[in-house]
Structures are given as C-alpha cells and as structure tokens.
Image (cartoon, rainbow, N blue to C red):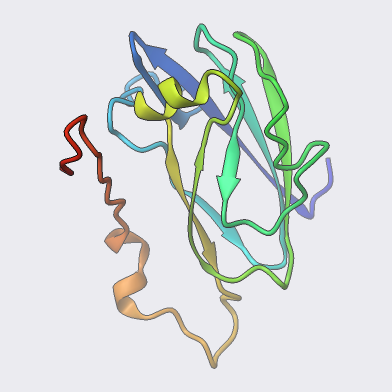
Length: 161
C-alpha cells in the first residue's frame, strides 16, 4: 500500500429498477431512485484509488466527467466490466493541470448505462483547489455543508421537472 495514494470504496446497488451508489456497507442508505451517490472529493496534486463493488444484478462500471485523467487501463476506461459480485479498482491522478470545480460520475457500460443512470446511479465529484494557498481561500458559501446537486429530468413530452 502506497501511503501517498488515498483509498476509498463505493458500492453499486440495485432495488428493482432503481440503481445507485452508496458508501460500502451502508445498507441503510437508499439505492438510487433520484438520490445521488456519495460525494467524491478530490484535491489537486493527489492520487486516489477507488474500488467499485458491484452488488447489482447487472454488469456495470464507473465513468467520470470533468476529470483530466487517463482514459484507459485502470483509469477512466468505459470498456471495463464489473459483473455482479465483482470489483473494479480505479486510479485517479489529479494532477496540477486539473481545474477545480464540480463534476459528476455515473455508470457507462455499453447497453446498461441508460437504465442505470435513469434509475438513479450518479453522483457529484468536487475537485478542490489547492487548499493551502493563502491567495485563494475557499469562500464561506462553498463550505461542504452548502453542497447540493440539482437534477433536471426531461419527460416524454419534453417538459422539464
């Protein structure tokens, strides 16, 4: 285990047609159905290892939007497969060229991603700026207790809710 790599686990779960992410072992957390998965927070200049545990009945994987990371191997490769009962480990190197901001993650396995994302499998990623920079403090309004994720769904008639 490399002490410079921060590690975490996330569970992919299913409840009927609802899919979602939750902290590993947190059986009391809802499984999708419009409830976003756990917030994933990264810092610029650090390395992370995230293990996805598939407890659903369908094959899945995990894909991010907004991260400037490797798109193959054990990086953000959408062709990887976590079959039911399997695990996949992803490595993310959040290098100095990564802009801070709000991003998101979701499953992206070919043929399953639409049902899984519309079933509720998605979550927010925040990439924090370099936190020890005295010239760039995080404003009070951006503190963790003020985080929220706005969801907009388009219905069959084209209306949004």
